[in-house]
Length: 440
Image 1: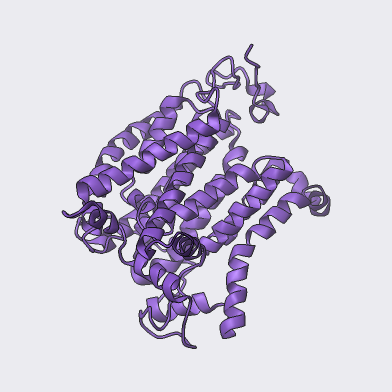
Image 2 (image 1 turned 180 degrees about the horizontal axis):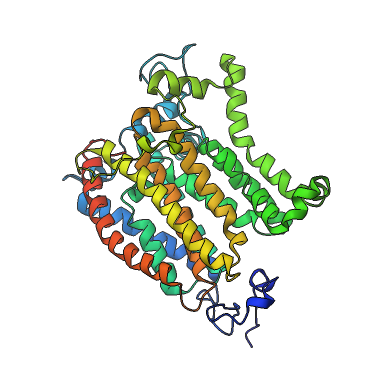
């Protein structure tokens, strides 16, 4: 007999609103989970199939003509060469860093997790550097999709909604960077793995959470604030008590604080390495400023001039990134409205998603602050990470309703149309990227 499972997060403190016409108490009887026998195996299998499908479309259909090995290697472009240089020659720089981009002189402008893992594969198996970069990124893409479906299974998201969510992520114009020799897939895999394991209570789960968290912060600098996810979740779950009695809260939740702190060690070890080798813990920031002209502007998101309202030309990647920045802000605002209306009526448990929104907003804010001084260059890639988190938050939101609210249904229609357009634009970007043209 199948056991009945009541989602306590939906039941707690919601007695007065259980008679609402759209409120649903989740149970394995009222709606069976789609992953019945082997949920982890199923999530891993679907993740593998999606990764293979992305590879088949990019390499088989859109890459330049030539042998399969040549078509596959065309996914190594632009930033990939910097990662390859780090693998082959290690980190190196003059002090102060050179004032323009020369990887043979100063290459400390990239966090170490991706090149370190690819180097382990390259020297461990004796394969070429480019191949190691691609295999590492694509294995991480597989991990990202696996965690995507594992989270959906934990939340008992229906098969149809899962499919729509996965499509909306895969259709993003920058989603092909998951299988290119870039660090997007590793960061997203580590981030989703951190969210998945830090939400569990066992000691083993906390160990896995810290491993993923350290990998996350060692992949991107924005992983440092994202490590605060379990603390944000706990504070909002506890409510005012956490603010009125911080010492008591800290004593009761020291384990999640430990997870957060240890998760920042990935970036911390990189900074320590820079301090010991060059006497500057912030050599990464110095190199970004000197070579890339990155001067953070933390007020950029509050300036109307930062937002560009135009239809970008397909051959103008800067305009595409500027539009991605604008659409990212619009999407965050729309999701906020969709969340607030039922939350005021006590129809949803929005606190269960606050950590996802926290990470999305942090990634968006840090990314915009960093690239505002270079006309939002590469924001298309960075916004993709925000997009994936928003999709996950909406999937969790939709599971609480038998029938989605009207604004959400309207948004769903818009998403379906956007997916078709996004896949078309993505095809154009893959075609250009694999031929060496700059995309994001």
